[in-house]
Length: 331
Image (cartoon, rainbow, N blue to C red; front, side, top):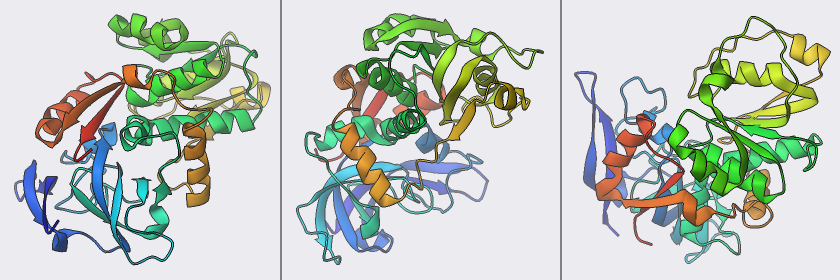
């Protein structure tokens, strides 16, 4: 594939970002030991930010966005990787400081590769994608701290989005009682279909509160929102509970006090999915193909291709996308 199609975002002199489909050549790819024929990618909120002026994601221009990809190795200079290997790549600098998954061809360092786990197709892997990996990593951190089914309700915020809906599905599939918070009341039935036992209005979980502590409610939480919502979670966790903080769509400021930490012993567990060491990353992916696999992956997923990608990026920026959207490039 000397020539291939890609979706490109480029900073223009007028301060705007020009974006759209282009034809690139193999010479346009960055350095790396492994070249992958991309068959599937997915759309994440971070990808939409990479196409915006001042979005805070793109660190080079022009850029092929796409923070995750799955496909087949077509060339390798690394002895441990062979042409024909099926792989998943996400995080690190992909789709931010180097060309990412919204192209038919990608080149990456060999030590970024995750072998496609048994039991997952490339499409399945991208239906899970960075969002599902982040949710799974957050759940793993909570369980390593002692969270287990039967201890009480676990709250998931931003539950209609890709990460939140996957967290609801994974937790319910593992036997947890799940409470889902969303600002989209019309999605309540869909979330209950994924296993949520209770659906809360986002207004409740983001309302300001003068009291530093509220009634203890949650045995644990996966927060995809940040800001006022994360402050609410910290005020309402049970003694000894933890929250996995995975996103900041609600803002980066955190108005809280030390009281949840010193009077209830709660834990704020930061989830950095982009820089997980590769062996730990591969271990989480094995769980995503096993006990953490979302039971309703098909119901969570819609599909587009490169020609329809721009509309999905606009919709995800506007908060109009539920669940996950995979991008078909050659699968």
